[in-house]
Length: 204
Length: 90
Image 1 (tube, chains in turn green, yellow):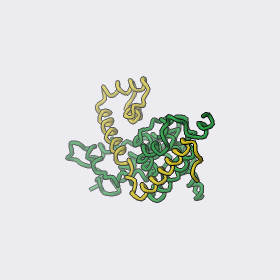
Image 2 (cartoon, each protein chain N blue to C red):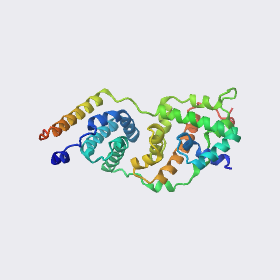
Image 3 (cartoon, chains in turn yellow, green):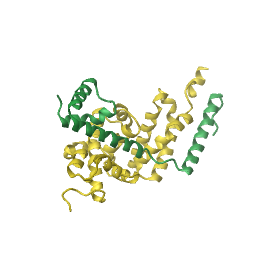
Image 4 (tube, chains in turn red, green):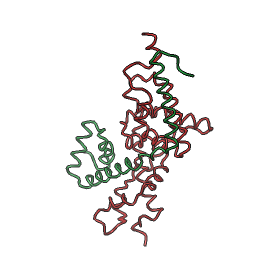
């Protein structure tokens, strides 16, 4: 009995296939975010599942399977980038200046007043953005800042869990989240101006 | 008492219910007296919800789903084989 237990998946825990199916849609969404390309995302999802299948017996807490699968996807993606000879982004980007730090989208909309007759100025601004616009803005954000935002806002991970998925310190996640939010705010304003969705107050 | 820039810095954490009790109390005290920040908090709430919904990801394409199903049912068979104490099929 003992030898059999050691070789097989311990009894009482869900099968890998069930765990994978439970998180499959979310995991695929994350793969699309990592790869930003459908073909690459397909490969990434399959490779993640294969690697997860092989390592499932090492997962000590099956209730943490979601974060574990997301962490595998992150690692597979980093390996694939390396294999293609692309440099994996490192923490050096965090040393960039805090230029965007003072920007406030809320404040900018109030000052620029793009819909002078609106009672709901700020909500009207958000209503301008369709799915593809939001995706375009997100795509323009550096992945170092985008991924912590995606993990916490879209997939419901805590900052601590996001740090584990990305295998970076909690403090780094917190500062990148802040930076990511600011880039999102600035990105949305710049996108709206560049695509003629709004007219700035100083323009005719 | 925290100022508006500090209140703004804490807003997303507040929306994620991730603030510790002291920063939370300070933010709520600020919001009690500052309608401008209440407006910005509401805006951030809408912005965050928009991102959460719109960026959820596309549905899994049918052909990929079929490949995944094949992969996972193969895994289920192997697991069943192991549980039955037989050699895993090649």
